[in-house]
Length: 218
Image 1 (cartoon, rainbow, N blue to C red):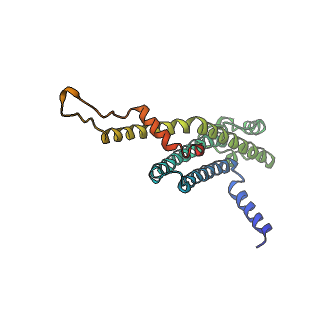
Image 2 (cartoon, rainbow, N blue to C red):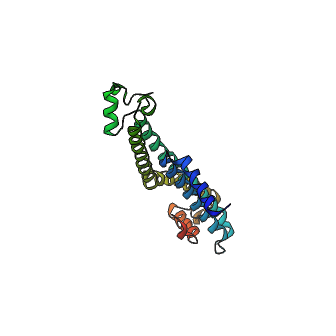
Image 3 (tube, rainbow, N blue to C red):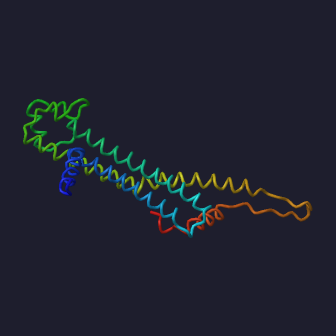
């Protein structure tokens, strides 16, 4: 099969699955981007000879957990935005002026925005109005997906990831405390203690762990 045929088949496949839903393509390509980014970071850590094996055993699961949070959050938020916007257009809550005027003229104004009403199915649109509706619907789809992805990547996902990281940090500190209990000396007049790890100690410890791969973090 020639390269031209492969390209045409690929183009037809994309058009079939995403031609009427460009927002879905943005969501799927965004998820693929997160997956590839995470895989690259994990691979870079795995093949980096400067990172000790013990640190790799910590860093690789850490990267995979962060990737899972990023991907799930991104998909959930953007898909929600796209779905809500799609329903608003489908039921006639959001419509181009020409389509809305046509529906109201034909006695369907009271049904616009109501649950169960479908503009494409129940509106009896002309071919020209149907094209205007589809163009408007695709535009709203892209806008809603873009807004959802921006909020996800810049606000929601970092907050969720930080909460999970803070929880992991507390558990790690608890483990460090358990491994370093207070040990008094027999002479009660001269008590000596092993210093318990503090939050500052843990942050220093974490900083040292990530020193070999800090440039890989997003």
